[in-house]
Length: 434
Image (cartoon, rainbow, N blue to C red; front, side, top):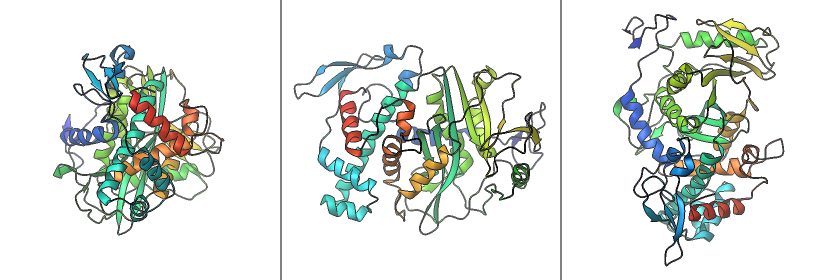
């Protein structure tokens, strides 16, 4: 039932006594509309008559019946496809200026500034931004074509954590990175900067309420401190990360609202799986989003959600049968990297907790931070630049294990260099298939 007992609009759960805050569904839906086009739009490979969003045709039990099939070529030699959904025949766009796109990819990988890239490409700024957007579209399309086919499995585990992306002049973005838990492959990277957003989702910078990382030798004490810090918020999901300078032509949105949109987007990955896990950081603003996005599957015992917490001493302090911590008596179990806590309680889990690298999202956040310009003057090219770096990280960056995240996930059997990546991406995009 609805309640204002704690001073904010909430639902009082009579079963457990909690007061989860009400979610602004309208704001989340508006965020989704913009984010889904950024991350899953098909400007290069999609049917012109259908909804151009990756994974939609692959959410059925028989994706091959709904996917597009090759249907000859145009007189100019361009690949034609026939949509399996609406039977419309359409041609794929030809990729031009390949040499410039390859040079651009190498310059970005070398961390060259925008002005240096424009100078070396000998092009106008307008042409640079057009090439940047095209390169991002090509790499994203290649990645999504692979992902929507190869991620269809009986079980999928996703690991999500937040971090701050900092720029000069007190411009800071709150970001979420989601990796496939067994490979470290980055599936989705979201930030809370949007070009259009309703007023009630705008983030008004306040003193940071990000949970601390206590440098104490006791993991039990560290977790207890984090729960106490959450209790000091106006409500559990009232997450702030400090004061921000305004950015022309864009808005910062509330971290909690972005979380709800982010996990709704992750449903595109989860729906084909018979069972899936969400491994999330110990943060209530993320917890609520993960639970709401997976509520139907949780009820059907097809999904589980777990907190994950890293601690420099590991989790030996916690007993083998777990330790209750916090106001909901969350039960934490020790691991070699720290601890985990089942949020969706079961007497027996159909699929056990399993996490290859507890630092997966953290490594992605660090990669994005290290490969961004020092200043952020406009949001115009930010999503394109992050998408390019996501693909460089996944396909070309060697892990300590000696392979890349894409190799671990089964997308490729060898390390790709930048030229190989672009060549394979263009071939896939111009053919409409991987």
